[in-house]
Amino acid sequence: MFRPTSLLLASAIFGSAVVASAAAASAGTLRFGDAFSEPTITVGKTHVMRPRSRWSLPARYPLSGLLPYNGGLVERFPKIYLIYWGFGKYGDPSGEAKYLTNFMTGVGGSSWLNTVTQYYDAKGNIKNPSSQLAGVWNYNTIVPSGPSDSQIQAVAQRGVKHFGYNPNATYFVMTPTGHNTGGFGTQFCAYHGAFSSGGHVVAYTNMPYITDAGQACGQNFVNSGPSGLLDGVSIVAGHEQAEAITDPNPPSGWSGNYGEIGDLCAWASNSTDISLSTGSFAVQPLWSDVNNNCVTSY
Image (cartoon, rainbow, N blue to C red; front, side, top):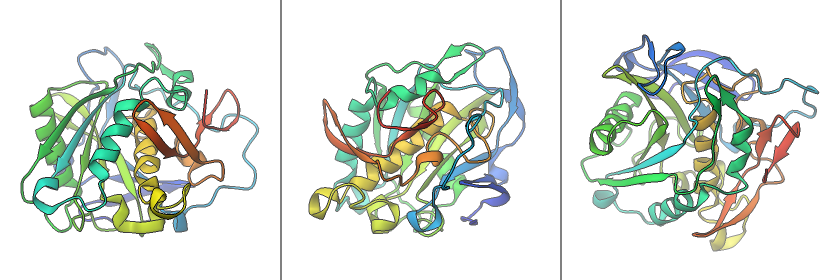
């Protein structure tokens, strides 16, 4: 378990860590967004993806019920907003921004992300449209050397103001090299959660500069040599996006004792490259309740 700056450890389950956000995260009961009429949920928790050294898959899973539904809302019409915080000021030596933007541009509608369409809420099943990337913002202001969760949330909130609010969107905050939240690379690779703002619930992801962690967060996990430098960027980002879609306000959506849709297959041996219209990208498999297995296509 870990305690990133401004995060308070709340509970831990096998394959995931669920933590209560700092006081800045306005915990309370409210509706997920104007597009929904039910149910009411509590915000203020985050869910982490563990580094390779902190995670191992169990030898045997239960035969059924591995990824239970907890009654909350999902992102039925997913959208992604990317906020590159300070990349213009501090640089991007590994080229993560271009790679991640290309991945998010092409991943919508792919057979890999189609795995999420078997999951649902009271309104119906999740869709997998193309063009899920709805906006990119280069937010070039000073970034603390170790931004707290409340500071990440504040930038996500600025993203909401910049792009507009969408109850089906996840606002990704990417921090530049050398400016990552404490615990990155040793306790977590990235995390997602939700906070309340203006009567809405905002789903967000803290995405550090993944190559700063090297192999701990996926470098060369699929591809060897220079071609695998950025493997971890798409592996981690894909993990977080699939989990934010199916459990945008953790753990109210699809989440159980073994974690979320990505945790169940994290760092699995059948991780692979997928071909998108924007290039080839390394991904991990995602859990399929239909197949009762980790799959890279559905």
